[in-house]
Picture 1: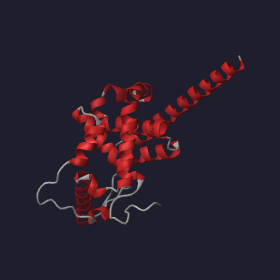
Picture 2 (picture 1 turned 180 degrees about the vertical axis):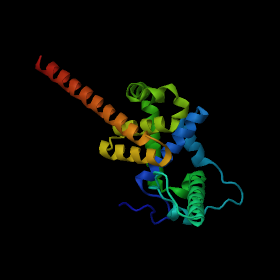
Picture 3 (picture 1 turned 90 degrees about the horizontal axis):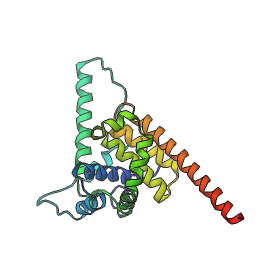
Length: 218
């Protein structure tokens, strides 16, 4: 596995970049703003007087903390311990995600995050049409309740088509993001949407290649 923290004590894994990009795109959707501009605004925001960030929280932060089936406990003590651990994880997550990006992420990860966001903005309109074809009807009928899921689809599709990351990696990352931040059947549905998207992309590419070949022959 790739290291989570680099020598400067900041996140250095691509997972962190995708997670940050998702938080930016999600916030931009809620605000009705441009994701790249929002990212740059957060990058250039001044810290409040007296603000200090505890770098130890980065080591305690778990990118792979997924929701799961209901947990059964036998005693009140076990239930209390579970709640304390959940509260602790939530507090660490809130602190990390709310901190100034320059204190949390390495320069390489910040550059990669911006690259993803630029790709999302570049393909937003075309991918809205694609998502309308591949997303389930209930997601399209309640888009305000599926903003996170739709943002994950935009991020994944843009990384595949613009940045050119191998689709196996992108799909796995998208599913993991859905496991972490969404609920219910979202991970399975996102996996299916992206695989349908890939089949359509490959079919379009093959058709274009055949058309180009016919032009050369004629």
